[in-house]
Length: 208
Image 1 (cartoon, one colour):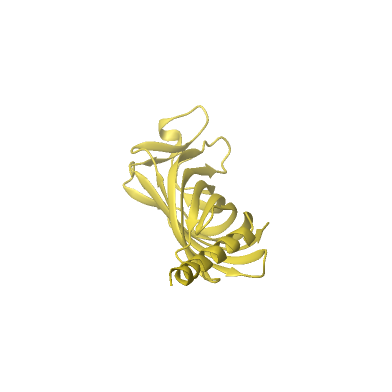
Image 2 (image 1 turned 45 degrees about the horizontal axis):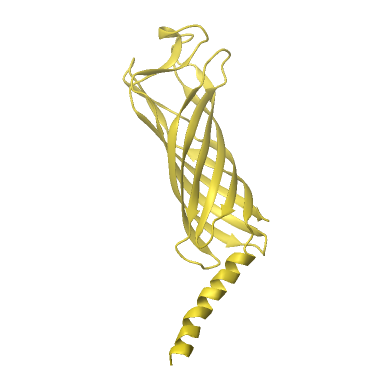
């Protein structure tokens, strides 16, 4: 009885190993989506300055790490606007690019073809205004989200993802200051310590 029992336990393990061997090692996914949320607390006026919602472009590179895990590098950029005062007086509307570079991975709780997964990472955020001479801000950030993978054949898959990005900024810091100037020549004097944004992404992944 021991031999049949051993074979019964060995067969699923061999099948899983064969599945991993057949699974492509690398995956690249361009994606489009939409970003919402995010604000700064202006210490000069005690007002909350919201980042407008906007379209998102993202690109991720993934490497299969056996079992249910993947390593990932993600870059995303949201083109949006923000209202702030300080450089020219009043409340000018300034174009703003919000960029994220994250290093992390994905975990699949199940091995089904249509598989949900958890995704997360650590990296940097950059808030880059379009105004001439305005400096950008780069800060540490983390991300966490959920996704769903739908196979479209052996080498392609549709992925849906929702992620939250939390950026840690220094309290009482001036943002988007004019070159060579300080104090009143900055768009925002923030009093908060974090900026929270959410992105929904839809992408076609190609594996090889």
